Image 1: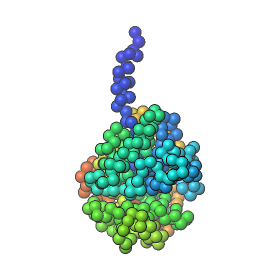
Image 2: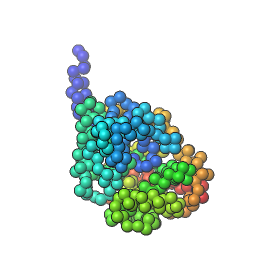
Image 3: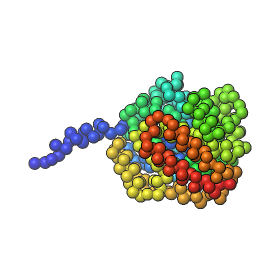
Length: 359
């Protein structure tokens, strides 16, 4: 007698229990785009790139084809432009993705959702529903969501919320070298912008103080005006201060991750352990039924070591005290379990080693 009928209810139950989408919460220069590209390569996935990016406010159908990695981005080659999946949400002769608001582009760290959140939720739900109508799994890659991670988990419980964690020295170095070599200050300016626009939040203010960050000496008149001021500030920012600002934002995002994600992706380990890459693939399959291939991950820690001589303008040895302060800040928060705290401690130890040669 066949065993197939007996297995069918279990299969159906497993299918219904699988997560119905993936929210990939990452930071700038964290290798999150590479993780997303591995998921996007799957036939059953609709991969939405940076759904909170302010680029989407002015995007037109004519712009989509040109939205590809540049030689200096460090991003993997992509089979389709970054924003290809948004074509369905654009109109001929008009600009802007349907439902997107420019205010979505700044991460927020308040405990309760802000006034924009219902519109943000409706916007993401529309993207999810259109993907589902086509029988596909929506996969969102964010760089501006970590502060709002608890809000998004509550609003989208059916989705798998995965977070990418990279040691802060490697992550910062990636952006710092882009500014140093190609005069691209965006990634140096980003932490100043996010911290400054959230400095009224007690948690953010505490991180700024603990890490000894000096913000641009301007009042945030508007998000756009402050973003421009931060970019100008970043062009001549003192290196140690730029790193302290980055650490403050990094640890704030870690605090939000500590409050709960379905899967934590350790980028440093991914490039060093084939076993971890295989296990991560299995974790994705168990939770959402997708099996992305991570076997081609690069050893990004070793790449940081090789680039140490090019890191100029920062006294890496003095950063040990900042790493220590940030770790103490995490330990003082409620919700972080011992395993996550130990992982962050390991990242700080690694950051101490990597920054030792910076001058």
